[in-house]
Image: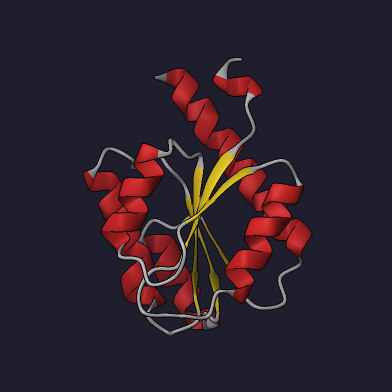
Length: 142
């Protein structure tokens, strides 16, 4: 089976000290139910751990969740860790309790999309599909 025929692989991570993972688990299950292969890192992971796992698992997309208010520091840190490990082409999507005024900053710092509470699950799933397809298309150009 070629990579194009395999399910999209995503990693869902909870960087930092945030222990609330209900939303991350919901998204992980929703993606799994749509045919994605999902790797969930669990809570309280460092950016380095998340990036290393993403590279090791050869994921198409990384999804991050934060409810602690540390998203402006932690999400770009994961993007930077991915880049330092040769994974700058892996899209990173983020979600959680993120103020509207922080979204532009996160997008400027390498995130491909941000989801706030109330975003419909089908919109999030669609974004993961689109990002996964773009990543695979990028890989095919190498």
